Length: 194
Image (cartoon, rainbow, N blue to C red; front, side):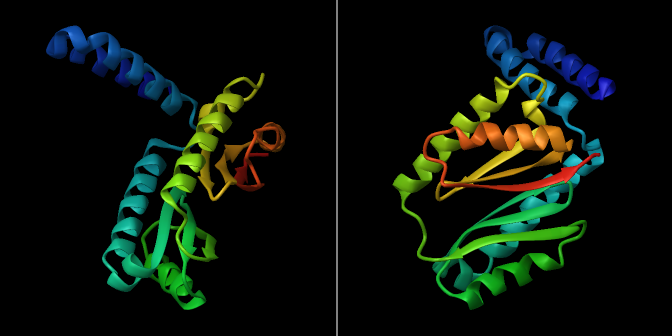
């Protein structure tokens, strides 16, 4: 972890000589990103695998015109656990989405949270984004909890929490999210380290 943080700081320093006056903004953003990477319990290889899984899964779903026209499915991967959220107009479409991502390399488990319902509105998507922002903000304020270890996904007022955490960290995160206005339900998709 220390080597990842050192590499990020070196990259930031190098960028400063290349971008001039934009350096403070880049340094602040990169420092937050570097802190998140340093706090993450996944290996660097697992982080890269998760990004690859997400790209392949979303591409597989987008390439299917039936799914693209009749479903709204988002993918999130954390340590090889693939979370599918969104809506499909029929159970058959939900199964079709699951089948499309099932064969992707390095997916250890698929957590299906696709609702049989029409796609949510742009207004609801905006509300979900706001809830995610509030949840992340609240998690930052919890003593003894490294919020960067927890990935937050909100879909139709349901908050999904992913990450490699201890049971105490997971319980603390879930209790904190319960207090956030607008959250209908919390689903923990944690992997526990203890």
